[in-house]
Length: 388
Ligand code: MTE
Image (cartoon, rainbow, N blue to C red):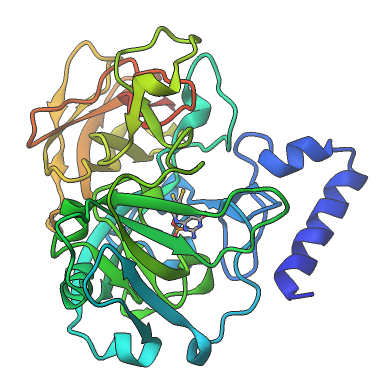
């Protein structure tokens, strides 16, 4: 048994000894609780059974997230054994010349780099009201890295996509437990042929770690994290959207607004693609007590395939808004760090709000669009602090 499994077994055992119900173990720890995970210091463990690690918002202080602080989302077990020399990637389906690549062959292809903010569609799920089942992510199922590797387009063009090719399907090498359906999803051919869509082999200049899909993963920049299949082993061009659990019922969005708490029929939904506009306050933290005087409010904002045009801050519960200063570092699919110098002269309790707007004219709403699976939570962010 590998050390991760041992470790998780020990954790589960400890939690059971402490009287925690097993059903809770598979989903989440109590809100905000953090457990040390080897090599991933300070991360919040959201699921024991399959590794789900959330980044504490206080870590959103660098434009690129160091890999050990990059959130992890696994639907099932990571592949136990993955030897680079044995790994193969097959490209087939609606193509003229199917072929297979080894890692050495893949590494010889021209490399492209994309700085991308990867966000899980379920990020912020715990904040939806009424609450919905699923991993109860707080605000930190989002991180940013420089991903590098061949562009998917180059590989697809070498295979020669037939006119019947409409979707690109990815299959990962996850260890599928019991009756769980395998992690297979597809993206439309237009996104597959976008030069920014990668078969990423590196993150922040180093080979992918196992948590993030070693030796290669798809990267569909600006889209929900689920579009970026890890431990990639098969690329298949299809004549239609892939049919399977992770395309439907999972990762779908209602065609019409839904009354909070209402059910939605699968036929009234469509597959989620690009991310929404969103900002998060990383400092001061919720519940903090600060001294009166100058308080610098920090945070980050992102908008999937769009660019952030402004972030506004309110220190009076939304009565008035002022622009935040946007950070220098920017790239098309990457978040923008921001800061706001607040002169907090009067002691008291304050609610600080942040609201982002993007190049598509979208602004964060004060009330999120509720949906039965709790996807794309993007309400105006808020922290409550005390100035003494
Ligand atoms: N790929 C495989 N093979 N298996 C998975 O469970 N999870 C997806 C995606 N790719 C997943 C996967 C989801 S839901 C997200 S949000 C991202 O991976 C998370 O990527 P990360 O763990 O590198 O942060």
